[in-house]
Image 1 (cartoon, rainbow, N blue to C red):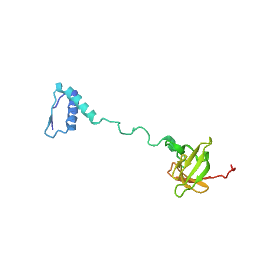
Image 2 (image 1 turned 30 degrees about the horizontal axis):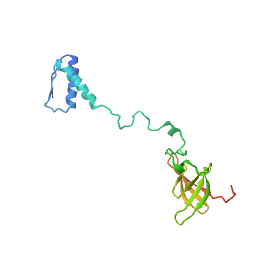
Image 3 (image 1 turned 120 degrees about the horizontal axis):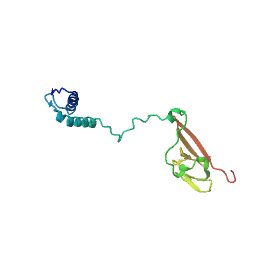
Image 4 (image 1 turned 60 degrees about the vertical axis):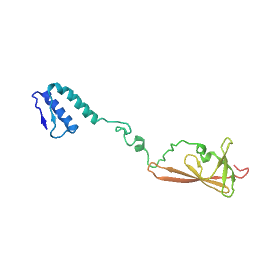
Length: 174
């Protein structure tokens, strides 16, 4: 590559920027990067724009590099702490099993269901496989009880399961 040698320092800086620019745009060995003092300011600005454009950082679709990967809450928490459920709750998920009274069980061949009521006396129907409470799923409806399996996860990822049994009370029993 042949370069025009200028005597003053400003010309050297401009030649250097032109050299960098010529290298960035991929000119071959035989290309000439010649500059005169009149062209030097235009080409320097052009070279700076080219360099800036090559190294422009776009944040769209990327994580912020200055946000820590692990939150302070996660590092200070106990590993056996149960993770809270952050899903939107609806239907029977709004009631925990302890808030409901089992009032009836109907068993018809393969279509068993149970009837419960809340503290205000409003009734609901439960079927096998329904979600109840924040973490529960109804696993079985038997002749005098409803079995609910609750599943929770700890911060360490350990799965905890427990069974809750809702008993059908006899008439007059509390």
